[in-house]
Image 1 (cartoon, rainbow, N blue to C red):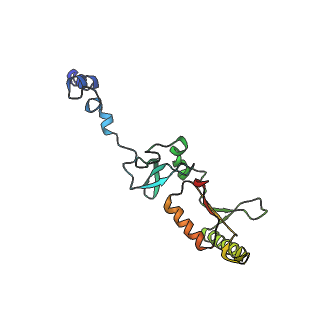
Image 2 (cartoon, helix red, strand yellow):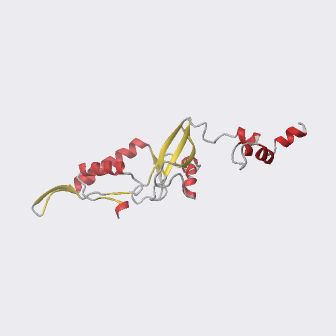
Image 3 (cartoon, rainbow, N blue to C red):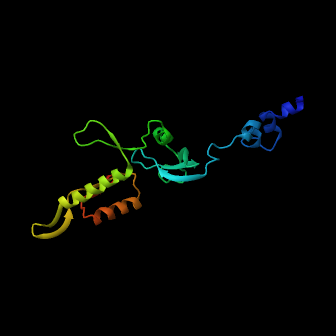
Length: 188
């Protein structure tokens, strides 16, 4: 490399002699920085999500490659957070890919001290059976001579990170089941 080429590779020289006097564009680029690529450029798809940690509901972009989560970043289109995440939200990738993540349903029987693994179908059947039993055992056809047709056997308390569509579906489901105690944390 000659002296002229060596001096021409300096960013300050390019800034003074070129079309970028403030050094914000081409003058500031080096050979290394031109070869850099965003860490999410190889992702197959981007899935919109909401941070699971607190009730603020910051938007997240989840980058997926080969059906695996490779990166989670703030969603600049989110009106809540405008692409910013707190330290916990920024570490959401560990929640999905960390070695401590459980990939099985764990169940502890009544008065039990140990957790046991269940397959998902068994767990879903147990939940359905308990909902049906609670509805049946808590059903009120009438109360004080007034027709009620309701159950007080279960209730719903939604989290503040649920959006309007999710709350709408939860309200429809629990109303169809006969529940009257349906609330959302965001209103409390």
